[in-house]
Image (cartoon, rainbow, N blue to C red; front, side, top):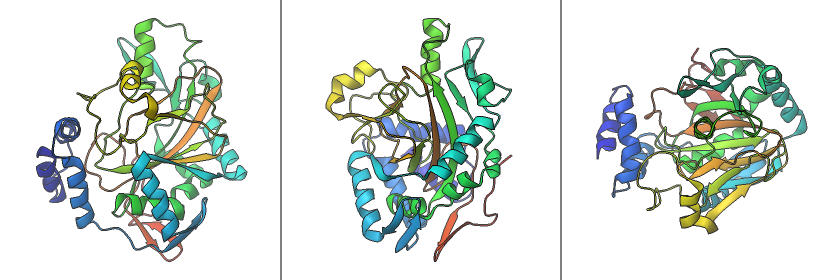
Length: 331
């Protein structure tokens, strides 16, 4: 019940803190009362969703029925693969932005794996690590195509329906992944890099409920780091998970071999994923992988350490806009 009490305090104005965040994660694993989903439903009552009849965007024309069917599939499986590919002009522009924009990379500092303090364009750092990520999200303001995706009506429409509450865009990022094979590191460092690179099975729970839209900006086959998902594990932690953390392939395969799905696709492939389900990025055997991500949540209750990407979104007619500042980046 800690999460319910903490959420009500937050709703009355008490700021997030790390204790309440870890309480939420603990409740998700150990509470027999499905408390996280119950609090999420309470939030939907306090913050009801918008009434949206249709939307037009990168996924085409979507009716209420279309979106209902998409969300039904996500509720059943935990993910949905859209038949539409991102258009080539948008894909090329975001990829070019990702190639030239200064980014940070994972490296060993003492006994810890941390993101580098320095940021350099990817082509200058791509032999340094296995993961490179944009940490200064304010830089997205320089990429019109990325901003248009953040404001896309289709994404808002789906998030609104799936979350059952007014969506809030709380994460926007891209990251490059490369193979670990060419890095001269010991096994301990290798495992730390896999952990920090999200290449071991885990679940996300920085907010009560959220949905992520991933766009593959490079071709992704089985050897190029596909998103790996365990179907149906997104509503409650499966019983073989006894604690928060990372989980071995052996454990997950032992209990859920027939539910593990590798999601491959051409550059431009778009996914909607509820990453409260068990998932990982498969370790790359070759090449490099670039992913763009948007995350919409139903409440900012949760992890206080994450950057705030935007204020609450509103929908009016055929226009999407951000409440208060259109787009607010926390510097």
